[in-house]
Amino acid sequence: MSNPPPDFPVALAREVFARLCGSLPPPVVDTPEARAVRDDLAYAAVEALYPVDAAEALLAVQVVTTDARALACLRLADMPGRTEVEAHRNRAQALAMMRISHTALRALERRQAARQKAEDAAWQVAAPAPAPEPAEEPEQSGIEAEADQYAIIYPQRAARIRACGGLPQPCDFGPPRDALVRVIANGDSPILRALDAEAERSRVTLQEILPQAAD
Image 1 (cartoon, one colour):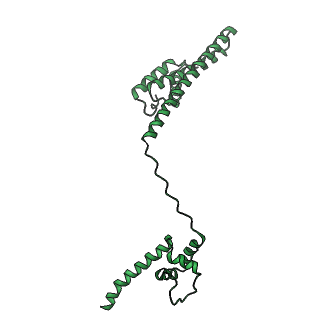
Image 2 (cartoon, one colour; image 1 turned 60 degrees about the vertical axis):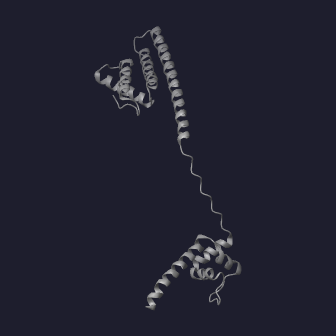
Image 3 (tube, one colour; image 1 turned 90 degrees about the vertical axis):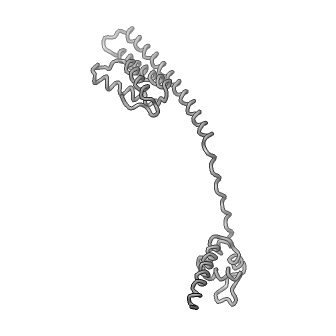
């Protein structure tokens, strides 16, 4: 016997396997080896239907065994020496077995779909609410982006502009236009705030050094 389907009790799996093997038609060449191959193939087909409880397992067994018997009836119908009446009867039996197999399969699928729907509903109730998406940062205007670019290219100049709240006096570098100076001096972008943090670190370091130099 193969491994039972996931979450299926082993004791029930043994009973399912016994019922399955007892309901299958004999193989074409009836030997112990052929029966073992037949049983393993049939159980693999039951596993592929993924039954998770006894009711689903019985339906899966019915699907596989009636399908196997339908194939056996068709094989009998084509055997040499069969009369037309016997062949017709075998084909009718095969058709009846196929109908039973298809009916059982539809019943199994409906049961599994209902179970899946109930599990999905339970999961949605138990699942935590999704975290709110972070608010998008407002896009920079053209002059704000230009101020950031200026701070990247000329960090020392931009730092002096921010420290002075405008152009330093006297100004010893080519001053940008007034609108750009105002944004550099008062802007709140991460790049401009980083200049303030760096200036603060430099000021603290200088205060630490000056007393040592005085000593």
